[in-house]
Image 1 (cartoon, rainbow, N blue to C red):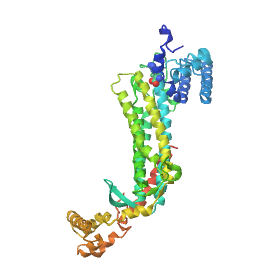
Image 2 (cartoon, protein in one colour; image 1 turned 135 degrees about the vertical axis):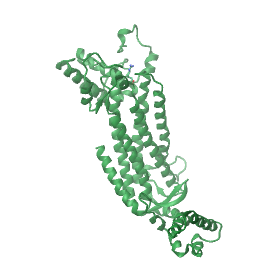
Image 3 (cartoon, rainbow, N blue to C red; image 1 turned 180 degrees about the horizontal axis):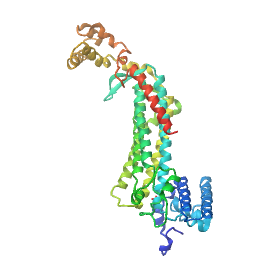
Length: 459
Ligand code: ARG
């Protein structure tokens, strides 16, 4: 078996070593980025005179063919191809002979893999941000068409105050807006080329890292070769940004599980986005929403696993760093699937606005409005809280309906009783950013504007 280091070694590597250390099974996914990195590297080598024009062309042609073979699935992997970098270089050398053997000039797999992974993250994080924006768009559409539908807003999962359905949906939308921001921010920080850092210290050859960086579309080149090859902050940041998306999907998922339960009955899933039971014929289950909850745990595992891998590593490159890829790839795949599934679910779910209203119309849900009514008349809030609390308690003890008790109370009377009329309390929420019709229509416009700007960022 041929290896990249065979000159220094007497015999072949043990099968167990290859089985344990090989990464081609997962890093083959970096092939397009590895080839892009090699193109930039060989062009840079040509421009600084380390390869002549004919050699550069030969290597570029070999890279084209290698890329085509990999894309078509007819690339013949050799037993010694322990990772994608080895496989590509081996094939380029087969195809381009001596010119191919110059491809790795001034380069190490250490700066190469860091370059590949940054290219990968730049692309994938942008794609995922676009998917998140599509989910936000659905939430906005549903909020816009929700009109004056309202439901209970909960604290401690106890009914607290009625809120517009649009407000509730956009609460999830704003959380996702922060995710888009985090993904964009992570992309900005990772936009640095490590190519030219070599194994650890750069090179004695006249390399031009700025040239390679520009060729690859990076905003800058590394400042320190040791940092360049050992830094995986960008993977940790990408994982954190993705994990926050997972957590937001999980919280939205939990809402869907609750809303579609027979106990709440606030929403009904479209058949295409629900599952049935193998035994119970009547069942319609919210499996997407449940998996959105569960997969957040998986992403948290990916993030904490990577952080544990990085902790305590000495400078600079260590093979431990190979363990950065699987958690990252898994997180990217799971978030892409999850965001798309939740987008379909949320665009097709039916809101049972009568059931939502009925739950929100319980007179007790207007208790805070009653207290605020007394405050508007000059009573200190703490006293008003006590007056209304006393009426609620007496009503719950069976003394009469809250409305009747209020009518009989000179401090409240008929005007206050009218606050209990179904649909009225939610209209009284006028605070900017609050849950009533006035602030919510302003909020919808702000959300729409923000979404438009974010969509343009990821066009
Ligand atoms: N497969 C390796 C990784 O993912 C590539 C770099 C290997 N470098 C080395 N010095 N063994 O990290």
